[in-house]
Image (cartoon, rainbow, N blue to C red):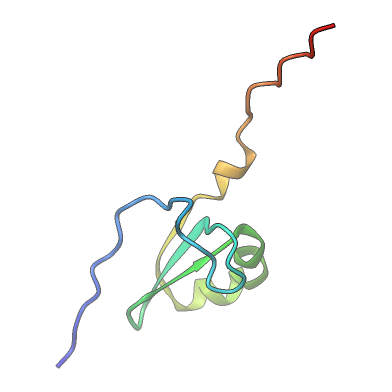
Amino acid sequence: MTTAVAPSAAALSAADRCDRCGAQAYLRVELQSGGELLFCAHHAREHGDKLKEIAANVVDETHKLSGTSAPAPEAER
């Protein structure tokens, strides 16, 4: 019997951790063989070419890392 894995539609959260090092995951790779892997941006770049070969679907949220944040308020004098 074959069981299909439903694709994950939910966005990645701070609770999702890299399967390689435990850092926050920004990439979800749904495998052709079923299952999924989660990677931080560093390991996603390191293993990117190989992941493309075995992926059925990729959710890439690394753009969240380059967002600009509000500047810190200046210290009062």
